[in-house]
Length: 211
Picture 1: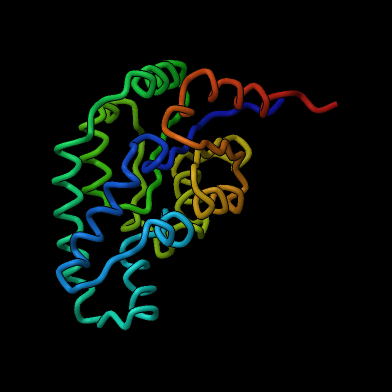
Picture 2: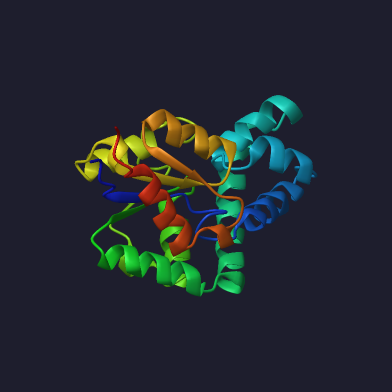
């Protein structure tokens, strides 16, 4: 019978309710140059993509000069950390879920299109760091989501097969990356769907023996 051995979590919208933080931080940085992203475009086009990719898209759509990208990215990261300090707090159901999974011997990874410093800061603020075995950021791969490289890297580091892992994702780019990696995918709508009961139901579903 197939045994699930690892849970691979996205971060924004899964473990941290930070979608709006990234949106606000990038728009604040873009606002210095009279630009911005609409909420519709954020939700339907930009959500889940790395900042560098978003800026490249804006270069094509709004003629945002490439020489400004590095500065805007740095300012955006600064604003993101400021918002994290103000808003990021532990969520009991996440602490409970990850602590139970960790104690039961499941490997846990966080695979996010954010930079490593942002991930580590948010995990610390959310009191989840002690339960995480590895972090894969957009700085650790050549291609971010929706490419599967991030999840493939985590699976390889765990020395597991894709079918032994569950990916927890909330947006189309992440779900596509999880599926392309060959892992089982648990789609969630909000951070509140990421709880011990839902994860265990998914584990049980994956471990049903084949006739």
